[in-house]
Image (cartoon, rainbow, N blue to C red):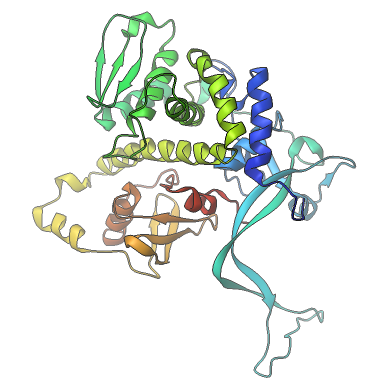
Amino acid sequence: MSGKNAKSLHEIVAENIIKKLEQGTAPWQKPWNSNGPAFELPYNAITGNRYKGINSLSLLSADRKDPRWLTFNQASANGWKVRKGEKATLIQFVKTNELVSKRDEKGRPVLDEQGKPVKVRVGLDRAIISTAWVFNAGQIDGIAPLVKPDVKYIQWNPLQRAEDLITASGADITHKAGDRAYYSPKYDSITMPLREQFDAPDKYYATLLHELGHWTGHQNRLDRSLINRFGTEGYAREELRAEIASMLIGQELHIGHDPGQHVAYVDSWIQILRDTPFEIHAAAADAEKILNYLLAFERKREIKAANVPIEEQSEAKQQKVKEATLSMGDEIAYNNTVYRVQGHLKRGRMLMEDLSTGNTFSMSKTDGLYNSLLYAKQNPNCIKAGEAPHRPLHTEKETVAAYGIRR
């Protein structure tokens, strides 16, 4: 899609989501439980990286059963063929470098043994937001069939993982008989029905984690607007973020997702997306932030499990961490991922690159990942290996960069 009149990705996704909301089939409206096959969010078939934010919603809206996606060139490079007549789906990515012809001292192109120009990758002065078209594995001949993991064989008990995360958050949670689950911004507390009122444990945890998603919006955490009365547009916007986040958390923890109690917001969501299509991008970005914020509590648990909790270090070591900083050019290994500090931005922020995926993102000193990387820089042999950490994301402009898939 090109030309001045071409619609942007968020406009396309907003239109698709509106249609699905009217049909009751938006991605976060589809319930699933922990007893069935594992639900998987879209990911790149070659790199294995999950598509994030607006890209994830764009691909989910395509209603494909196979979660694997790839570009035409990726398919061709592996000897697979996109079937004739198949239509691609739009995503966006951030281009931070490009391939150019290598030249000698006299400015002439350097050729390889076959006489073809040698290409080298050079960084761009400014990152460029670009678009790409991807095909689902179900549209491609030759690719191996999808083998879905069975939730029953996931080694880490999903419910225990959810319980541990909730405990690690330190959130103030009160249980009392009733039919309401809610977060109170005024008292910064969550109220839940009694556990025995739920007909399945996974429904209890899915509901509690939804409220924990709202809890992340407190001014001392992700600082979203939470002082909105029920029925207002602001209230519906926050519920949209929490619902998308619930879908992401349900998939990450394999505890399921139950959207039934939030059908009351559908009409408001439709109106919001009609009036402001970019809202779907902003909501998806905030949902990723919620996921990242909550999963950061697991990283803290991993550090504790490795017997190197920052909280229990000597006063001298704590002071050392406080005084140290991340510097431009630093490459830090943390949880099976290497991060590079690309540069410093305004207001104390810095531009980071995940070298395992090529994705870039903005980070501040108040982000949980900053402290983790700072500690890993000073103690490279102490960080326990595990899953690649999820990155904290921020404003709409910054999340555009972080969500893209760089090929």
